[in-house]
Length: 166
Image 1 (cartoon, rainbow, N blue to C red):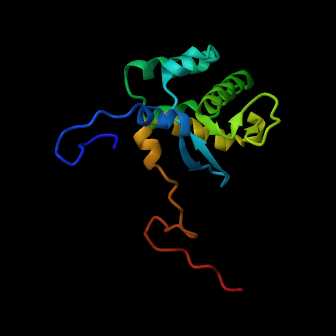
Image 2: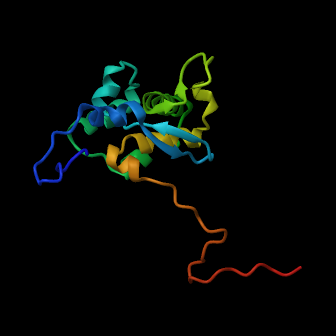
């Protein structure tokens, strides 16, 4: 009963539990690797409060405070860089965002419990995927699902290439 009425048309105040649900419970998502996790939206203010935002991530996080960042800008962040230092900085940015956004399993430095993993347990592709997902608004994250691709994609002319016979 997050928004709406009590059946009489009178609006009902949203309970506090509903406000906390996304932050505490997150949303189940399937990563590119096929592994299933629970993610929460990462807000720029929450990320900045961690004090762990690498310099390379600061411009995008700062922009998010005042305006929307589109998917192209997120894709631009995770693309390969020209040198090792910049690539390592980008990876550190992905790591920070993944740690902030993953609720289950939690990402910790020295995993011991059943609900803990190391950042190294996530593939780089999965880290990039999480990065793009957790910066989405909660309602988008909750609706998002990976759409399966067909076994064979259509060519430019819209026809499938025939497999050669043996």
